[in-house]
Structure formats: C-alpha cells, structure tokens
Length: 208
Image (cartoon, rainbow, N blue to C red; front, side, top):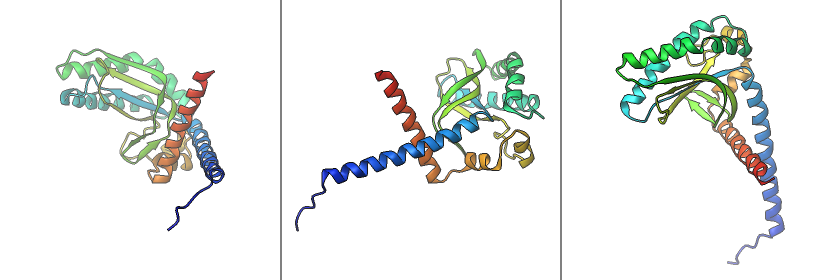
C-alpha cells in the first residue's frame, strides 16, 4: 500500500480555511458578548482560600450579598441604573459581607467594588457566558486566594426562578437569555474561540 502524500499547498489551504472559520466564529461571539455586557452586571465572590471552611464562608457571604442586592435592584430597568444603585451602596454591601464573616467566627477583611473585569468563558449550572470584559460587583474575602463564585446580579439570574417579565424589564431579549443558558457543545466552542481570539490580539499587541 502506497503512502498517501498530501501536497503542502493543499494543507495550507485547509489551514487557512480553518483559521478563517475560527476568526469568523470568534468575531460573532465577540459581538454577542459586547451586547450582553451592556445589559448585565456580574457578581464575583472570591474566597480567602480553598480550605473547606473558607469555601463554605464564601457561600454564606454570597447569599447575604445577593439578598441585599436583589432588594436594592428591584424594579431597576437597565444595567446603568443598577450600576448607579450598587455604586451608591458599596459601603452597606461591604458591611453586610463583613458582618457575615464576623458572625461565622472569622476576622477577614472584605473588599467590595464595582469594576470592569475580564472573565474567561464560565458556566454555572445551565448558565453560560462568553469570555470578555464585564462590569462586576466584586466581593473579595481576606486574601482572595481561593476559588471564586460568579453569577449575574442584574438581572437576577443567580436566583432559581427568573420570570420572563423580569428579563424584559431589564432589557434582556429572549435571544439574549437563550445565549446565556445555552450549554450545548457548539456554543461552548464558539465561546472558547473568543478566548483564543482575545489571546491572539493580546499577543499581537505585545509585539508592536
């Protein structure tokens, strides 16, 4: 049986088509991510460490901050409005988190901020978000060296049940929500392509 010889020219054409498809997919995901980022605010809670006690504490802080944020943001109709409310209440939110830490028997300091943060593609249950820059309510417990927990604080996608009316009030379309909750393999691949595209652009920028 003769060895198959594939011409290099043909291989280059295949590689070029693959790269073109990958870039096209990444650009699609980037456009979708940009639209979503204007409509949502993420919640990012970072534990002091990966010890069992610190990870359990992280979830207690998460629950209290979520409950307070949900009350503060009730009835808000845009991410911009929600951001203003959260920014005005960073101190009360930090006090709630610190009180939770103290009541659990720890003396960790807690930092709460609202800032733009880069996230990789992340999944939480049925919720999935493409990589990119998002405005996030960040809660850092102690040294902030443990595993983190994330979700979407506006609209309240962290809650078990989210009404369609609440999503529409927040300006999130059915297509937006479908993208967020799509966990099938094709979407995961598209989101990962966006991560690859971001890495390539960062590398090119560093070479200039």
